[in-house]
Amino acid sequence: MKRELTGGHVLAITLAAFGTIIGVNLVMAANAISSFPGVETASPYVASQHFQADRAAQQQLGWQADLTLVEGRLALHLTDAQGQGVAPRTLQLMLRRPTHQASDQQPRLNPEGPGRWTARVDLAPGNWNADLIAQADDGTPYRLRLPLHVRP
Image (cartoon, rainbow, N blue to C red; front, side, top):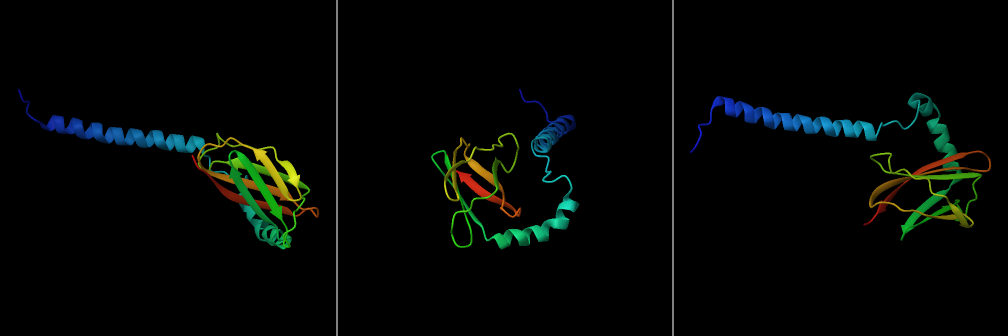
């Protein structure tokens, strides 16, 4: 027995379809906002005032950073303009997912020689950012974001 399609049925189908779409969008928006606040610095205006000077000082150092990951072993190589290993006063590396903070890691870097450090890490497949923060002996800050792709 076939039932007749009435205006009420069409209205119910339309409301259910749009209600589902709106509900999914609200859930996705809430998850996006709660997992990534979007804040990189407490005061972007103050940070912008020093950006050019900090960048010029960092470029004067002439440092180059190389980051590799092979079978769970992360290797960081930091060299100066002449290709010699650099020994910064301080060194910190933070591994972050570009989309959320739940997986952030700060691996313990073990020195392996001039300008070379390694660490054991367990990273899920996908894209990561490695935020390198170092300080030269003269106090010049060195900041660099290195992309890292982990294959499954």
